[in-house]
Length: 145
Image (cartoon, rainbow, N blue to C red; front, side, top):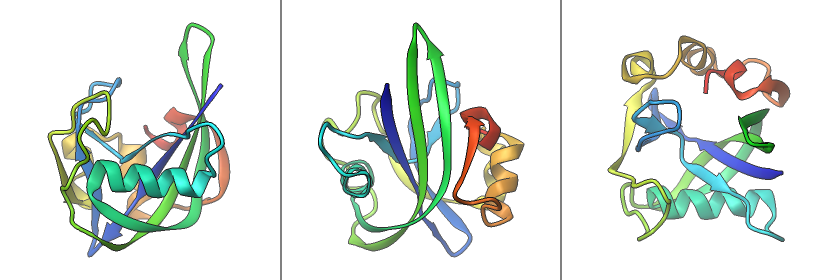
């Protein structure tokens, strides 16, 4: 079993995203990644955000906990948190930050999420301010990821 954290940073109606291919065919993703052995969840999110986006964040409320079962007996617990930028420079990506290349880091209008490949469900949750935050949502698909 693996645990993965992702961060949602929203500023001025725009969400911070990575221009990066995903296993679902989308070309955009939320920043985040695996928790290292012995690493607290909040520290992992702060580290991943710094490595992948160049910004420093403060971890906010837990949005959702989901299961991701990609096959071959693999089980990933997926935790999504709100985060607020506290410093850093958007787009300063650490070398080797992810095994999947990150082409860029951008704030994208929430209204454009569906147009760039996010599911209508994820766009709906973002536009509504994450109703049901803090909930176990079952499969990751239930939050549209």
